[in-house]
Image (cartoon, rainbow, N blue to C red; front, side, top):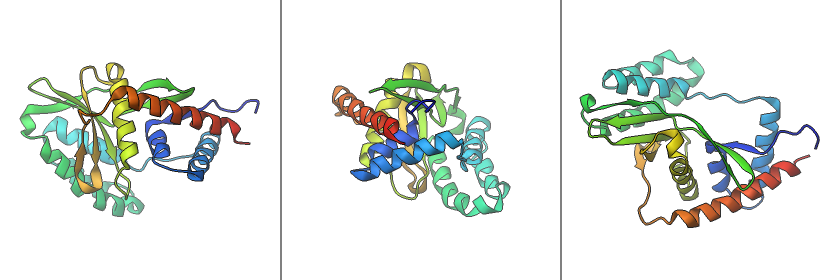
Length: 210
């Protein structure tokens, strides 16, 4: 269709897509396309991410996360009451606050199977021993699907030179306080082939939407 937006997905959208099966994939892509055309969409988690970064940077032990519950709009307060305990638990896993800080990350735009994918971590963490991690936070009520986790970690690794050089990708399931890191047994070339096929199908569905 003339003037249609080119196939595009954020990392979150694409990994949600690969976690779906059958006709649900096409329905999901159609909804994303309509959302992109209308310019709609709102992220309710921004205040929590900023609070987590502030607690790491200023070594405030969760004070900013705790305060965020009362700072957000009343409609989002129940959500923050659910998310904050897991975010505090993750903060505690980082160890000595004096030995960890916030690292600057950059978004990357990759192309896979004809689909542009925006790879955008929520934050970066750097330890005094030189290690660094690029972190995506999972906020959904359900745990991340295995396919979504594999895709997220692979795509972040794929673009780590742009995102945060020499860092390790990490996915934090905030509601359950669970941390996911790459499985050393994973074969990147096989994941790349799988995701290329998924991305090509996504791009075809996007273009086919009337």
